[in-house]
Length: 181
Image (cartoon, rainbow, N blue to C red; front, side, top):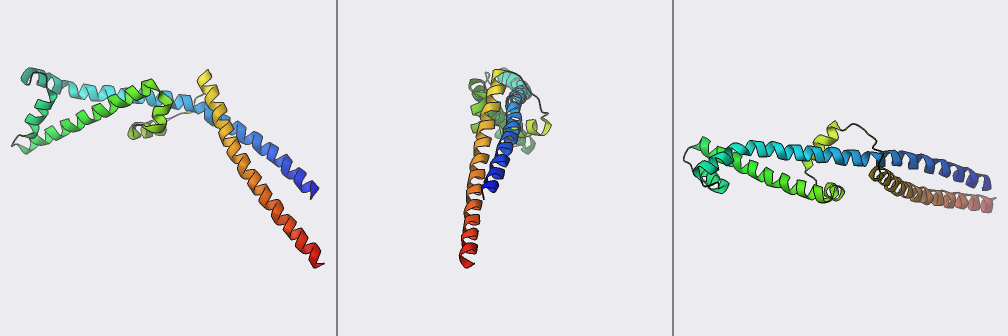
């Protein structure tokens, strides 16, 4: 029984080191992903702004700069195609507002924004094209340490629970076996 405990302890130390190392490598990736997400978010916002620019020009020329009046004009048209164009403009304006709010949130606290209110399609796009990168700065090192400690503690806790359960089962088995002989 003592030798089994030593083997389990030895395995536990090596597993802990391996888990910590792998988790630290994962943690080093976080700042790079956050930066890539920020670039993609700003690029999406710029793209929507460019798409709306001609409508802003029309609003300036015909509706004293009011996009709302231009939108209402489109949507109230008897021409179905023209009215559908108004619906599309409404979607663009909605998207622009969503992206402007997201960029503002991202600029105030990128990590919190990404955890609590990311723009899902932008995040998925970044994830699909993400290439691992290691940035050697304080944010990367801090991220690596936090992720490594959290994952290591979780794995360690599971290992302790499993070890305790295994030892309890073994001691029951040994006690049952010794009492039956």
